[in-house]
Structures are given as structure tokens and as C-alpha cells.
Length: 157
Image 1 (cartoon, one colour):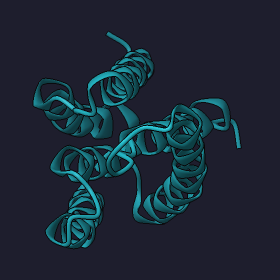
Image 2: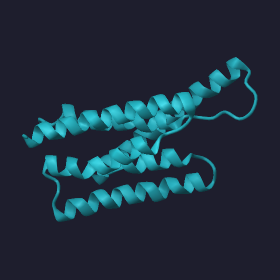
Image 3: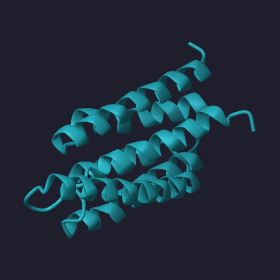
Image 4: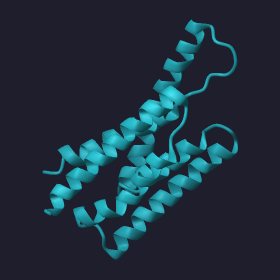
């Protein structure tokens, strides 16, 4: 199999996993481990397919994923984010080089603000009781689709 074809197939699998995460987070407010796990485990295959499976690159990818996990684990610790969101952030971060991870987190933050506003408005319109539960996995997944789409469409630069 051609490695570039494998890279595109893996990006397609990532997109499917992120779309499933969007659906499950909106519908059930859950991000399933059976979706997040394969996203994380497929990242090294993507590194091989894109030719970034060398020593320094692997360290960069793993460090970016670990830093993302630890950073958002703080938000989980203070009850500001769910555990599924933290795992999804880290799993998707493994797919990108460190500078793209910064862009990914920034995009997720902007999209997260938009998702928060939308779900606060829905909560108010429905006059629902209790606290608003924000499906932050939507923002994470959309940011992941955005960054992976840029890799797909801008690979001729």
C-alpha cells in the first residue's frame, strides 16, 4: 500500500472518529473510550505514513500530547471539563506537530466559547433547570477536523 494513501485513509478515520465524538457528546454528553483509544493508537501509524517517525519527531509528538493531557487534566481536576474531553484533547494532539497543537488548542478554545454561548442560549430558551452542561467535545472535534483538514488540503506548500 502506498504510504500517502495510508495517510489519507488514517485522516479519514480520524475524521470519522471526531464526527462520532461530536454526535455522542451532543446526544449523551459522553465521549467514548472506544472512539478516543483508536484515535490515539492510530497516530503512530500516521507518523509512519507521513514520514515523521524519526527519533526527534516521535519525542515532539509525545511531548505535545502529554503536555496537552496534563494541561487539561488541571481543568478536569477543578470540575471545569470532563475526563472524556481531556482524553480526546490528548489523543488528537498526538496527530500534530507541537506548533500545530498550539493552533489546535487555540482553535478549540475559540470554538469552545462559541459552543458555550450556543448551549447557554438553548438552556435559557428552554428554561431548563440546573447547570448548563457544555459538550466541549464538539469544539475539540471541530478544531481537530480543522487542523487535520489543513494538513490534507495544504500539503502542496
